[in-house]
Length: 249
Image 1 (cartoon, rainbow, N blue to C red):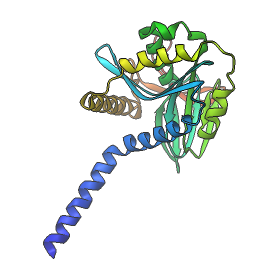
Image 2: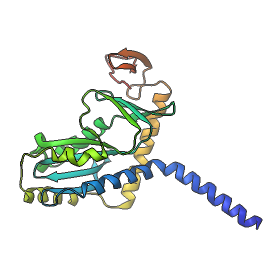
Image 3: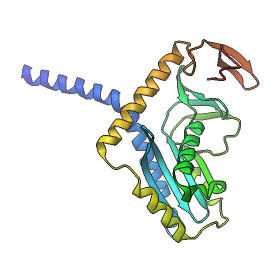
Image 4: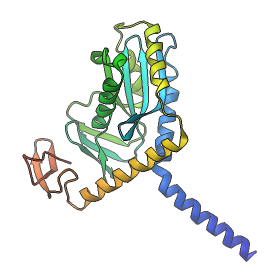
C-alpha cells in the first residue's frame, strides 16, 4: 500500500511539473481551437480558413495562428489566451499583464502580427499583390479587461471577430484566386512534428531570456539600463541610451 501511495505521489508531482512547464503552450492551443471554431462559421463560398501555419524564415521559423483568405481581403490573426488585466499602447514594444497585482511583460501582439504579415508579403508574391487588403487582427479569448491606448481598433474579443471580418465587404478577388493562395500557403506549411517542437522550444527560450533581462532592468536590445520615464499615456521604462536606442516597455 505504501509503495502504491509513493508511486501515485511521484506521478502527481511529475504531472504538476509537466503542466507547469507546458501550461502556456496548452493555453495557447485552447485559444487557437476556439478561434478556429469561430472562423469555421464564415461562409465557405467566400472565405477559406487556414489554421496553425508554420514556415521556414531563414535559419528560424515563423508560426502564424490563422489566415483567412476571402474575396474581400486576407486576414492574419494572432490569438492571445491571457487572464487578468492587459495594459498596453499600440506603439510600445511590451504590454503589461496584471493578475491580482502581479505584473508580467507581454510582447506587443500588434508588433508580433506585423512581423507575420511582413514575412508573408516578403515570401509570397501572390499575397504581396493584395498588401492594401491585408488585415491584421489580434483576438483575446478571456482577459478580464483590456486597457489599451493608441491605434488598437483591430484588437478584438472572440465574439467580435467574425463581425469585424465581415465588415470588409468590397470584393477584390474571386474565390478561385482565394483557393490558389490557400494552396500555395499549404504547400510550404511545415507539418513535421519535430520541426514544430523545435520552434516552440526556441520561442519559449527566447522569451524567457528577454524577460530575464527586462526584469533585471536591462535593455534587451543594447544592454543599457532601463529608466522610468513619464509620457502622455502614463509611466513607462525606456533605455538609458536613448536616442541611440529607442526601446520602451
